[in-house]
Length: 185
Image (cartoon, rainbow, N blue to C red; front, side):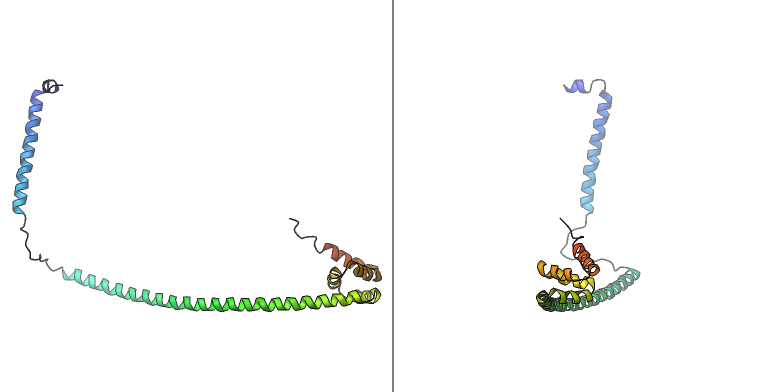
């Protein structure tokens, strides 16, 4: 495309557009020179700002006082929280120590109770079945069933066989149902 085919039929409009563009460029160029001429000269002295209005100064100083009061309150809260955290940490440490000591005491008590039950079970196993049956018949069925479950099957059978049928049946039901609700999986 040549310049002639681009402006064909648009001759006067194209000339006017070019003249307007040139006029704008000249105005911009002249405006820059004037702006540079009116710019303040840079000096080594600091610029002096006018004093702000008194209402603004008073409002800012009042706000600064409020901020200082809030900062002091926050500092006091932080100090109180730090003390509370120390106290909580101390109590948690004491609680952990007490828990460990309690666990040891419970383990000792459980061990002592287990030793007592084992010894008593051995005594009942060593007794004659008729004598042990008389004792077991006097016990509550749950309590007696606990001992029977710990005994060797032969000794438990001898005691159950020497007991009245209704008492032996009650203890058998308790023994049979002790693990009925235990999970299978």
